[in-house]
Image 1 (cartoon, rainbow, N blue to C red):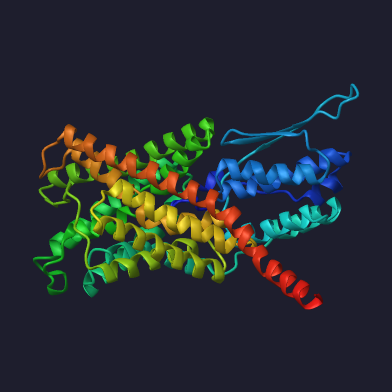
Image 2: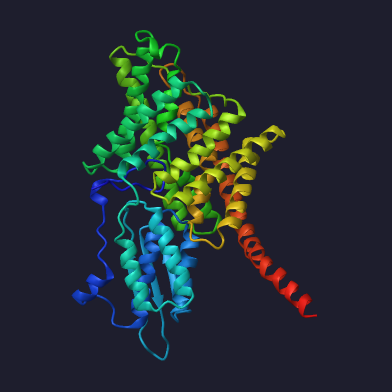
Length: 470
């Protein structure tokens, strides 16, 4: 059985949190389903919302999707609330009848974007009039779908995240090969550890230890093995850390805050703090232990310089593709995501070249990619939230968070500098706000523009037909 991954890059959740979803058909046979149409509609809606939210859809879009389903089945006055770990739907039928309330607990599951795409097609069919009983059977079929491709393909995708990031800094074949090998070892190790039901904080802690171990080995091999000669150990650390840092969770938290969903925003932000703290704790404690044993390793607290623009765009393109590959997306979704990631980074690079800082440049990159993605995906079932997340992943401030905390606490070779760390942290927060704002505004602008563009061919055809009749 594969271990469930979260919506972030390469992250795992403990095996103890795997949740077995009982189908609606099985509950019906047990006599545990509601007997009214309203109750069945709410049960189906909560299950669809659970799948979408746990797969990474933001709170606002999840609620809007759930309300569309409830309105279609005649529950226009139903209220929906999400509190990060639970869903609540309540409907008052009127005429003195008691209200109907349904609650569903959200549990982590394997992120399967192929299922999300199928569910979004089902939602469109429901809105167009699909009967409730057929919709329930269709959802059970979707929920029971197997993974679209082998687990090793997803593991490879997660491991290639480090390679993609390295391409943005260097094109050295040796560095890229080392990044791939360490990425595979890191992912496989965390998958094994997740079977021990460790909390996410300790998985992140172990990930930090592994990153230090790999970095130490490369630093040692630099003077003993010719292949590793001249390899910057900090590059190895960055490749590993990109698979551990919760940059996208930070952006999702900010986006929920922008949409005024403060409960889920606060929960996600606290999760970011704990996950990032676990990584930094692992790094710092690992360095201290190694120092006690007389082994010195240097991990720089200063940001690395980006390489040439061409490899940067190639790295961003690959990063968008492998992110969705690690989350079991369809091939067309992966293709669109890679193009949007390239567009996002191109917008960022062009804005930087024009003399703007990282915050404004991140906003532009996210705005451009989200707008185009919304235009292209408006009438498709491809999960737009996943494509936009993949598009902005090259921009996320995960590494900036790492630098900020490392600068604040210091390393063996670098004295702690709280002021410097807080300054970097402020930039990271600003970048996260800019990405979330750009993505939100881009989706907001792109959806109506997409609807308008989709009507243009029909408008032109109607005009041509009218002219011919005249």
